[in-house]
Length: 417
Ligand code: AMP
Ligand code: GLY
Image (cartoon, rainbow, N blue to C red; front, side):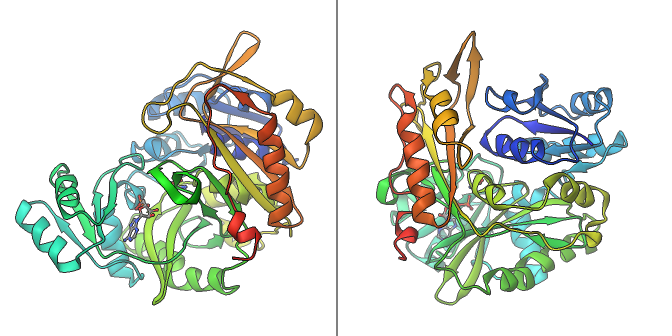
């Protein structure tokens, strides 16, 4: 099978790594990719937001499957363009990707499907904003309706700050605050059949102890030893299957990766958000534990034949990933700094620990930083403590001037807290 992956972050590196290990994959391309992905896939330049260009590239490569990684191309209709060219694609249509692209659409789908989520109001005027803020009280949760690359959500005790954020958006969702630990649960679906993956937890704040600003994600781990063993079954029944069914009944079937961001509250599981693609950095740990070869599952999802796929097989190992971010991430990340130590990790720590590239590019012989999140150092072990130890040992070998990483990824869970 010839596979083309669209995107160029650590999630796409994790996807390409798994696909490169799949015996059914005999040609693997990534566009545009990055310096790390170049080691497992052939890179092609493309404007990932240009559906016609992606479809042309897929046709030229005679791809049997296109996998669209990030949300922006999905919302821009890249899957539709590839599908229209007659090539199977893993990733929802632009219409179905509104589940991530519009918070208001997601709320509407959840209400119709009886999926548990925070109570909310969609507001377009200052009067509606004031009414909603006062209805729920502090802490205030204010979400820009559109795609905002993780910057659209403000959670604050400060009413004035909540109001100011709301008035800066055209359309805003104001909702009830949800208490309790967060879990990310992904499912692969063809629009009818839903195959859940294993749950993971990510760390959104920049600094240890969940301090500092929100980021795209500073680390993740899986499995979750503290979670109820029935969590996956429960979320399948109350969230994933009803959402997939509702979208199909609306005539906008969702095929691809359905990402449920959940809060485990004292009153039960609630959906915080949906995404329409693999999450980053959770994908790095979830795929590290997946034993079923990936390409066939994604192709079945793309072709609408997922009902023929047996349940996914998982390693009993635990996985941890630690993100190394550039100087001044997330505010004004500095790029262009050389990265050293990659060869040492490969020589000393492999195959249980490896470096996935997020924002990197090659400059002559050197690999340099090219984004806010630069690397995602991933390791597996017999338990979380061992996976953590291996991941941090590899992190310590990497030299990147001014870089930062959290030192407490999976620490509490490894100690049984
Ligand atoms: P979202 O983009 O919807 O995932 O929101 C980003 C982050 O804001 C989430 O991961 C949560 O940490 C937080 N958040 C979002 N909605 C709520 C809520 N209703 N209650 C508490 N925290 C929330
Ligand atoms: N891990 C958060 C996200 O991918 O949106």
